[in-house]
Length: 249
Image (spheres, rainbow, N blue to C red):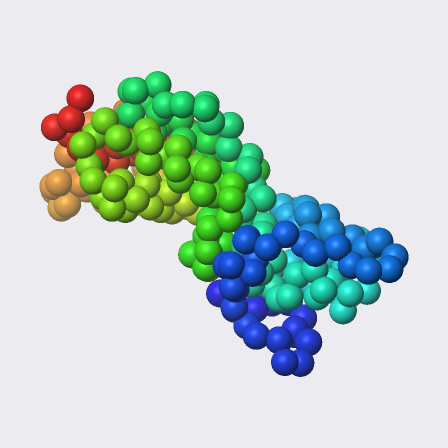
């Protein structure tokens, strides 16, 4: 991910040290109490990303939102990469998951995926941020541990469960990137989703009317039902989940 923030102070190392970031609490300083906290900085950065997009999150912009000097933030957050990790983990804390799985792993996985989708809709910068993530914070680890517990009845080994949850998260992020991009394109075009869908349908039906694209024509003839973004997401999610361990209960 290209860095869009102000340059870090001379001598700073680019990248994230997970031990320094997550294992050590912020150390209290001697003298006057600190003016800000890492949590305040992270919350401000998330608010900027939510309203203006991820590219708008710079150390200067965060400092301006807090009424602080840009250089003062580096004593709390050493670089933009670290700030991104903090942002991702903060919004991961939005997951509302039960203490224990129900035992119905398919239903529980659907719930996790729906939580992920809801979070990505509230924070539309998140799907693009996830590929740049370098480490896992405590909120993310809690979700991951719960997901691994959910998948225990599948009979998959621990590594397979890790990979499967990565696959599920990747599906949700990819689908949400598409949904959000489509919404932006429709808004820019000044047309309703129904108008766009009708125009697309007319074009495709005309394209297959001459006998070309036989398989596409068959698919178009079978298309029906709810075509809303939520309904399409649910159908695709079921295909992903049912392919995880189809032989299990």
